[in-house]
Every structure is written in structure tokens, then in C-alpha cells.
Image (cartoon, rainbow, N blue to C red; front, side, top):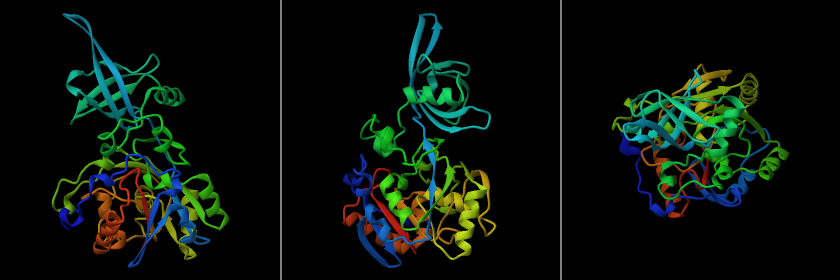
Length: 348
């Protein structure tokens, strides 16, 4: 298929820059087969039933946007250069890959100071990115990062306003647990404790998995033939307990519905053999029309960027023509798009 098959015109004023308040007041487009209906997230219990399993990504977004100084002692004495750093991915050796602006003003081996407590040494630079070694690890690193970092808002929001204190809660899910993401699993931002309690009370089950969403989720597809696109890799884990709970639901004919494309990509990565199994590692699974879903029976997800891999994923779930109708309806009804936008429940 061609990239143009997943394009659409989106009015600029439909890009949300703040979330709905309260979270559950966001609009919810419900697509069941060929039927489309307009509701709110608070109506979600009307479309779920006892025994359904919602798969939730419990990754925690770190305040990955940092501003620091690089100091250098040269012929003009001690000088400093301002550095804008966005952390991208933690590496197995304890370093971080990061974007630095301006990258040309820092050399390998130099230190960038973010606060009295937090600094990082540039280990290497390649392909427009840098590898950083921080002076702290573990809880000390988390505390120092939380003190000075800002939430790494998606580029389509960051272009309209800077991150602020509200984003530290707005851009974090109710159940966030395992630090490591630099982007939120945004479909999950619509849930609060009261809605979770209501769903649990009616017999809906929850399974937690972890996929650390990377900045690559915002990378555009640049090839016309989508079969030649290379996906970015992200680290994830499906525990033995989670796999067993999902596997039992499938065996009993109950619905498994991931909340968000990240949860969907992870459980399908863990089920490539045909059955869900415990899984840990990096996934670069690319889900496009024709994909055979092994686990997911539906999907709750926000509205995605034109020509994005996520448009391809929802088209694989519902069908290309159906998604075109869904998105045309959403635009006509003024749904809010992208990370802080409204949501949809897709049930093929």
C-alpha cells in the first residue's frame, strides 16, 4: 500500500493542546463494525461487559526535556553554551541516547550541567544524536530529573506552547509505574480512579504490561511504499502473570481490548507464535492492513497523525475504508486530535 492511502486533511484548530477536564469528559467515538456513534469516555461501561480484559500500559513518562550549560575554558576564558537536551531511550549499558540542540556546540567528553545535583558527560555523537552518561543512577537520578526536567510534549503541542507544571500530571496515566517512556500512552490518559472502580465493579479485568514509548513514535513515514518503512524499536515486557491472564481470557472466548496502540503492539509482539507468552525485549513490530491479530479483539485509541504508522495500525484493525469514514466523521463532529485529544473505541 502507498503512504497516500493513510492521508487526510486535518483542520489546525482540532489539534488539542490541553486535555479535557475531567479526563473522562473527553468525547468517545464508538465504532462497532459499520456503526459509528458519539459518546464520552464516561460512557465506556456501556460498551464493555463482565469478563472483558483491558490491557493497560503502565510505563511512566519521565520529564525528559532538560536545559543545561556546557562550560569550556578557551582562549577567551571560561565560556558557557546553553544546551537543550531531550532524552530518547535508555540503553542497556546505563547511558541514554539524546537529542542535543545545538549538537555542534558540544564535543565528546564534555560535561553538560543541568543543576547542582545533575550533570551528564557526552560519550559519543552520531546521526544527529548523542550518547550521555549521567552522574547519578537509580532513585537519585529519578529525583534529580524530576526536580529540573520538563515533560517532553509531542512536537505538535510543543510548537504551540511550552510544557508547564500541569503537564507533569496531565501527561501521565493514572496507573503509571515503571519509569522510562519519553511519550505517554495517550489513550490511557482518559482514565481516572472512579472510572476504573466502576469498570472493576461490573467485572471488567485489567492486565498491566510495560512498553517504554520512545520519541520514535513521532517519526514520520518518509517512504511511499509503506512495506519499506523501518519501525523504531521500543523496550517492553509482558510478565508471565499478564500472559497467563490474557491467555485464559482468549481460551474462554472473552474479549481482550488493549488501551492504546502501545499495549496492542506489545501483546501482539508477544503472540507471534499464535499464542500469548511471557516476553521481554525490544519490539519493532509494524502493523499494517493484512496483519493477522492473535490477541486483540478491539482497541481504545486516540486520533492519530495523517500518514503515520498508527493510522496504518488502526486501518489494520478496522479496514482502510472504515477508518476513512471514522476519521471523516470525527473531523465533521469536531473531535479533538492527537495526544491530548478525544478517544475512540474500535470494535471490528
